[in-house]
Image (cartoon, rainbow, N blue to C red):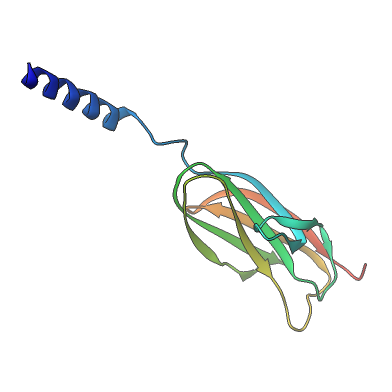
Length: 132
């Protein structure tokens, strides 16, 4: 009888290991763009137009569990300005912040920030730098 119970327990654990998952896989749920951050890493002041001397923040909100590499590509006039990356290991919801700043100020014009998860494009946001 003990042998049967042991085998039943083994089969249940093996089946669960093959088909059960601890939760939904990690995914991007939202991309926020703005000029300030909250304490939790989400954007506090949403914006799509910035002064040349302002810092531009993008917060990538994720949900689920897993490991991934989040990266962004900041672009202006067809040129890549920066491509920072961050490693994630999360079990629930998270906010991952990236920012772009310039000590001398940004030239006026149209900019884009592209968001990637594990090298795959997730979302692109456009913003403008002007004199407001």
